[in-house]
Picture 1 (cartoon, rainbow, N blue to C red):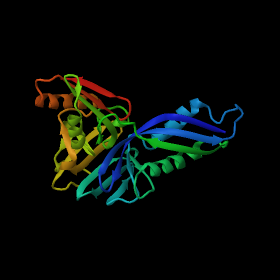
Picture 2 (tube, one colour):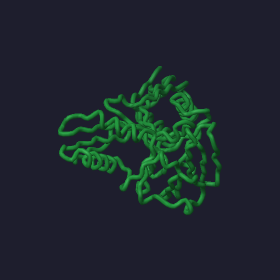
Picture 3 (tube, rainbow, N blue to C red):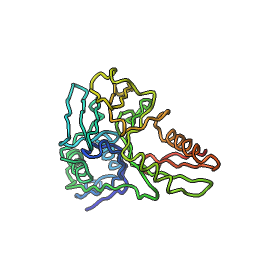
Picture 4 (cartoon, helix red, strand yellow):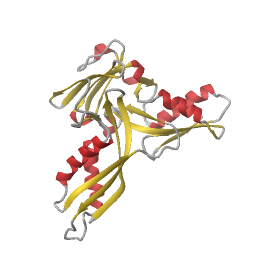
Length: 285
């Protein structure tokens, strides 16, 4: 017997790529279960699928930085914390110190859809009832109606997992002037922010203030304490954009609207900024 749940959840996370650095991603999770009927004449109650399996997925990878087994650098454990120090691309640098729950370690040379699928299946299957023989997972991005970008960030004021300093999203971007869609402006910002780290100005520190990681000469450094612990990072300055506001999607939309308004002052500006799949913020200027 086969049971399926389409769009069970969305995983918003970042993964480390040896070419691109920290890549923000948002994937829709479709799930299929194969097994025998239980005493309730079900493979698994939909309520348990939505609660238990979604909970496992959220716990193991959502709002984390996923690290492959092969990186240009090292990951070191320090009790409840781990530090990451690596290079990527054309000698760009990334270092991070965070509580263990901010990381997801995946035994694969690279992080891609199949690597994450294999990791999720291996994590979920031992926690399911014995009548379930196997599960299948499909990961897919949202169908894009406009240009999009991959970004990572951290929100120290957030009570939940958004406080983790490197997690991210694959996000569409809409821009219109006087009611007319402007794909050229969408592309301009999507290109500018492709694989970017969006930081908040008030979180910036001097490299001498770093406690657990080392910065390169051209790095920008950030740190904050949040409910889950102390977070800090250093990143090559050309892979980072510092905003004067928090990097919530509401503030990102307002920031973009202000920047575009400054260039097209005579026009009415509308920005639709997404945070992953099917959610976001709209701002007018």
